[in-house]
Length: 251
Image 1 (cartoon, helix red, strand yellow):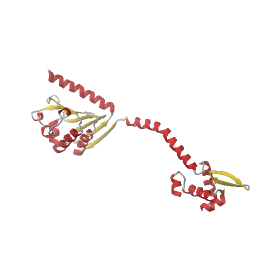
Image 2 (cartoon, one colour):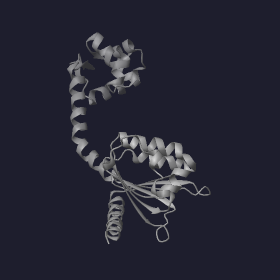
Image 3 (cartoon, one colour):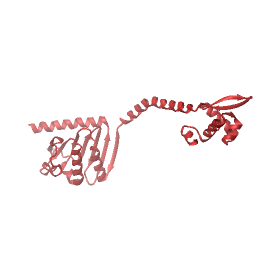
Image 4 (cartoon, one colour):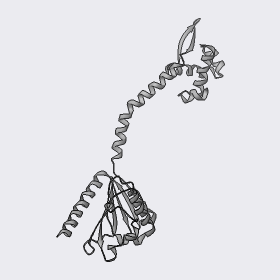
């Protein structure tokens, strides 16, 4: 029972002194200290602490100061007070957590695994993925991973819109990576002039996140920026570029 009382907030000595009071029905310091097997001076301070916490009450017995235990329900009352206090703090704590959550966060990863990490995280997208990419470079860089990534994306039914520089091989470069009978509504690609728009990095925009990767073997790097304002701005810029690309094709 000592252990349980300690879990309720009492110290080891407080638990032993309180139990001693319960066992003898209360009494003077000397008798409680003897029963609890603690030093008398120490016991006196412990009894006062228990009284302040509301677990004991003080009375006089033949002119001698004595202590008696309060009803055991006091522990339940104290626990309920703690619960109510915690409930009262929750709204304020949630506000603090929310304010921290909106602070931009940036993570960087190196090497091939770092690049793959950015692509993998984009599969958490709750909406579409927008991407400035170089499809030829991507499929040549990690064909096995990209094939699995593409399959997983289709299974999750995540739509993607890509802007990519056009080359002769890039027209059908994705064909071997597309699952059989895939939903064509889940992928849109605009090929732009490679001489004007030769993207050497991959930029993926999803949720409140922007992922940037370098596919250059000499500087393999993946960066993830979590910022709602930055992501919204990048999405607006992408949509502007997308409209420009569609307008160019329409002419």
